Length: 302
Image (cartoon, rainbow, N blue to C red; front, side, top):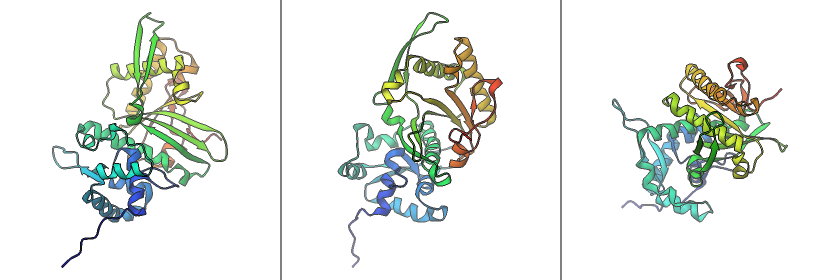
């Protein structure tokens, strides 16, 4: 007669949920993730089978739920999100499990939302691992769009070129805070990950909202910082980067914005999945202005 062992939370499972001291990022922080993404965060690629087995154990015991994104030709890799037992466990160790974390909500999302969330994860994971490739820098923390959505930034702003008053709600994909090790120097970003699907009208409206955010200074009290960078990433190729830069420059010129406002925006195209070196150390970022197209690193200034 076989004996069924009761599940016991062990470190090998716990780190998948909430990360480690060295890399304090897990499913709790990412909202949803694939096995490959969690493996990349905490293990070498050769550990993927073990990670999938551990994730299955967590699913079988009600800590996680899993699904895949249906496509016309095949099913995509499974992705995982917290389930009821997982949320109860995290609440018991002091994590905020707000009502917006209701388990079934993660499985009811539209495929485009899920695809965007998983692409965003690749950017956030690269940020979490930056200290491994350059010990001068580390991710101090990030706030996911799901959390920012609870109290969105609302801006009332008058367009000086038209006299029209507009109200914008700004919810970036993430707020990211890098720190230079051993100093008080920080690089704080409002991260927007673009999938190459948004047309000019809505993209420029997004830029207009960020211009309003910068000019009103509303972000200072919200994030308790004096300076922010609005960083756009994409996996859609260099042509999309050029398009985003051009649309942003057009919007800046339309209202005759100053260099101080315009230089807040920066853009890069990355391979998927990107690496910490590619995304944050290499000189890959560009401002919106065509006459200032030189590429630079967001973190390294030498």
